[in-house]
Image 1 (cartoon, rainbow, N blue to C red):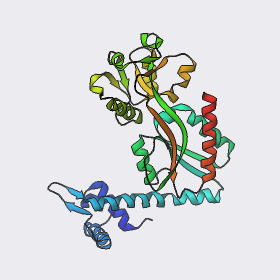
Image 2: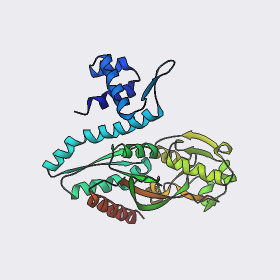
Image 3: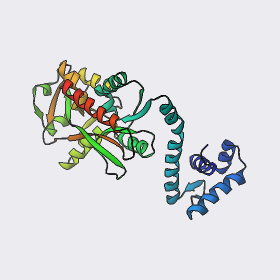
Image 4: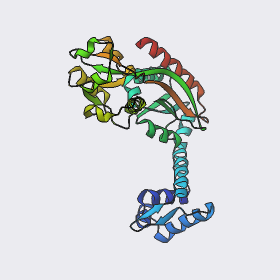
Length: 299
């Protein structure tokens, strides 16, 4: 099992209570305290301090807990890695944003698994920030995200360049235009992704670049699910700013129209990001190849 001191550290960090941690770990409270003191002595720093109402983690303690979580995740992967080796199989965990998941990515990865016996892929959908945390903590092996963050621990491969567009119902007069102005957009009912989504962040950043903000627009709904937003646009309940890549089927089937927004280019890169110590580069190479084939087929 994982080092008992690290187990104790993580349990105390999660509960912020020595008594609760001792009950969960089936240890005496003095034993829990001793484990924490031993770690503090080893790293020559305070990990926890007692606040007025509760236990608090110090800034240096946050660093120690962060790396302890990574160690735990790596340690918990050992049994499945050994089983994969014995069974001549490979298990890959891929994190994607909802934008990527709603494209043809799932179909492409299913095709890859069918073509390669012994490959097992777990697909996890989350926000960009959460996916980077999962990658840092070794909870996923690969992430496919819009844009990228500079981190010396990761490598990245450019998969595609996407852009944001305005999706409007075919019954909306704006559907007859190629470009809409911001003043025209301000008169529309906007249905947007949640603030933490990459799509929303990019839209707001471009508004800021032209001295505008969402406060000047009529946002009537904020929804996490892209499929729901697209359905509402079709029914002419409002318009939405979406990634063009998730609208290809709707464009092809003429379910709704897409137009550009004047002065907002809103272009972004789609990247595959992975740890530098990730060993299965042949898998990455094949996924990149299949992704590019998928793009050609969809366009």
